[in-house]
Length: 549
Image (cartoon, rainbow, N blue to C red; front, top):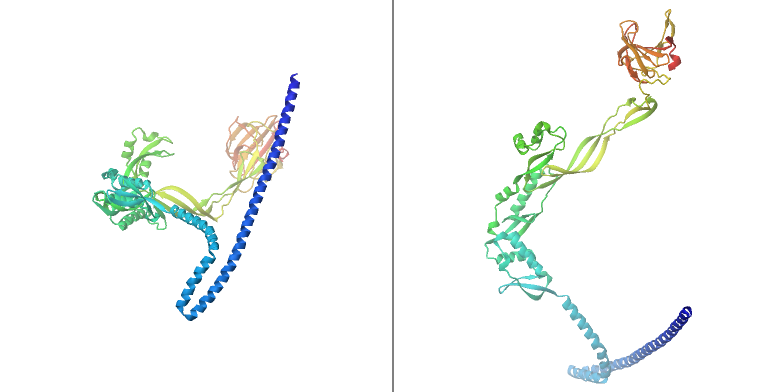
């Protein structure tokens, strides 16, 4: 039952929408037909009206031309009789023309009058809209200024109270009274001019002068602007020093304001010079740098050591640490001068270190194959100083005049074995040279138990352990092997190094493969600087070339 009711309601609602839609379409069509009919009728009426007036205007124009021709002929004939007859004929023709064409004139007047009226209205509105209006400021019965708005008076009053008259003037005597008036924008009074007018009416003893304002505060006023300009330029020149090409300016905002000033604010040039060159002492904190001393800090800031110590009673001179704060006194000029200089100088160019890796050498190995050399460059900087202290530096140009030479280094990458650990593979015991001057075997009627390694300049060159192991013994003899040592590599393998000039290890010390153990020498029974190298297996000397190649 509920479904049947919902279905019946849905059908009725659809029919309702259908009827509403059909009726809406019919109504809209009817409205569209009436609107179209109205506009067609209006258009046709307008066209007919225009045609009627155009036709009437053409006919009227033809009559006017005809009337002018007839009047011209009559006036011409009358002119032959004299000027007076011609003038009489002119007025008679004019009267007849007005009577004859009065309907056309009325039509023209009916059209022209509204147009002229609209033009007059627009012109009047535009004229009054573009007019400037101002406020006439009156003091008593006297008008002293024309203001654009009340804000101008407030600005002028602030200048009087805070900048010109100091505390000797209060604006209470000037209760503004305004009157609206039509004026020209060029006649508006500026706040500065109004300030002068208020001062002139203040009753104070005033003079014309130029006031010097620093950051909005009146310092004093001079009667001569040339003197004030000269003193300011003199202060700038002091900051510039000998560098005439430097750009100088004041850090504070400087204003020179011409106007009326009370006599009490007038100062002399000498007084102003003293003010501009004045300085005061201010306390600041200095951060201690490495190797700083109280004496050096005092000298750097032009202070006596006693004064610096008195300012810092808690600091013990010999116990200062980096980043400690030291209270110092330095002068603070009354007027800060900023100097911008272009500085040129020569500076070194650091050389680069280029490392080449050698996998056959240990990580603690390095060999310089080419020494590095610094280059040179010409530098141009823009440097800003405030009161002689550099505050910023900007690079303008860098020109390299001499190229640097790279430092070339060969470095090992092979990890060195642990000390005392034998690898089973021996390295050449004298890296300086691989030149063998005497081999293992028979020599001079005896057996040479090792090999001799030598070349020019070998004296003092490092001798390294052929493999890891333990130093078996070290002996310093004046004959035979001279200074020599032996290393036990385990498994019955021992190496011997003789005729050294110095030995760097001790008995029982663990050594690593390739570690420096001695220096080439000429001790013992030796005919010249060389390394005598032996290899023993099970206590018997064997040919070293079979182990070290």
